[in-house]
Length: 158
Image 1 (cartoon, rainbow, N blue to C red):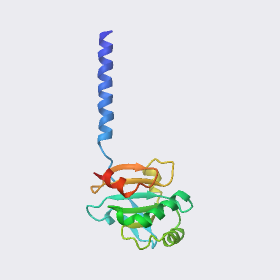
Image 2: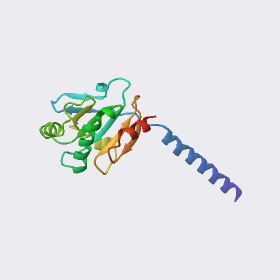
Image 3: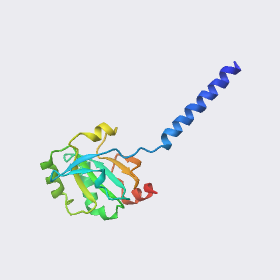
Image 4: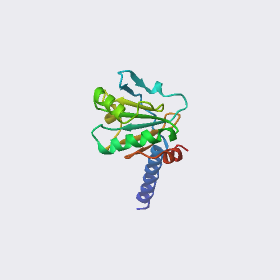
């Protein structure tokens, strides 16, 4: 009986260590390829060196997503990173959305099309907007099912 008890403790210890190790290893940013509203390709190489990235997956027909775009418009300069707003919508629709929401003039915001459906293959999410934060080294820090404010992002990047 004692032998089974010890084996059970060893199994629990190994399981706990492997589980903790999986959380300790942050996921690296996958290689992305999106199109901007002018049909130019954007990849990870287009993120300036030593710059964090907030990846916001949205749809133009989503009310919460449109609200998030308005928040980005008015607060973009407060975010200490690049913001890529990625959508499966067609380029014409995205161009109209970008113009109507006033995102075209923001230096740290890019509206992009997920023309290869990469987001659904790479991430598990059920709600929109879906937001992923990557640090300056390309490590995934956190995911959100809402647009976090700049203060939260700054805190999470520490």
